[in-house]
Length: 405
Image (cartoon, rainbow, N blue to C red):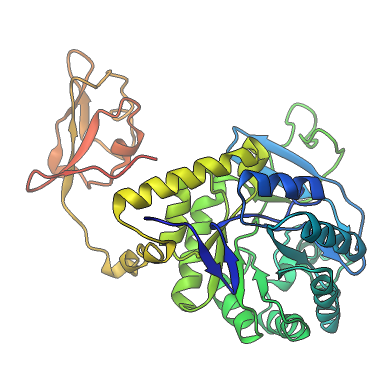
């Protein structure tokens, strides 16, 4: 019988689904809803000893794939303590307290201890917020908060120091949340040396949405008249997250890893685990579809595990890593496309590709492979055919049919 129960850095979890720190976790009501929907843990909204500047959320969503998040709510440590205390009194869900310490290293330990005293089950050190510290550093401006967020997450020596300060101040496990703006595998190693029990990756890389080109380049957000660089969230960053998790796991084989970044389906959950994650974090999925989709993730994963013969998450973890090699060691096969004439609609998408000259349209407009020997077998036609009329065939006649998620 397959199970999703899991141990993560000493926490006993009923499943691997964790709600990431965000406006999804800044009130007791939302935490209670997350527990009711089936989440195993929540990471509370980012808090500070002293909130560096006031901000409120503003977002932009493009095609439900790209989610821009330049800013969010900030919580004082007093508000975070009340939230943690309330959650521990009224729920059984595991509470991970997300925090960002001050510019002095010792302050990270002070803040962590306050959250432990409030009842937190784990501390999550935010070394990755793209909206605090990094933007100011990049443009040479001064900003309250100093070397914080993603700016801190690029400095291995300082990250190790604050990891040691926080880890030594508390008895509960400490996790470092890493930024894709830095070398995450090396940063994970540094934080581990500082005593963290786990790392979480990835937070959002920096980005900018399209401006309003018909209005002098003004921002296209609904509630601002100007803007800062935005954290890029949602399905668009998922492949980037896979890469970082695989690199962290490869360099740190024994470290507990929470993997997230654009996960939207149970298949994505399995992907992330096979690349090295122990547990999974979600944000945009719940913004767009609500906590109720946790049930779908759970049912989909369990059915898959039963069908494939996996009894637990550990049996799936890292399976994809053995296939990752350096470019000089890639093992190529000689395959070519084959067109199913019964499915081909004659749309011409394969014929019109400029990098490939092997297709022509026959009298009935349907695609025909005419220059097979020139084919690289790259697969672009396979992945992009709108009618799914193209398959890839090896020299021995076997059909290559990777899943199209």
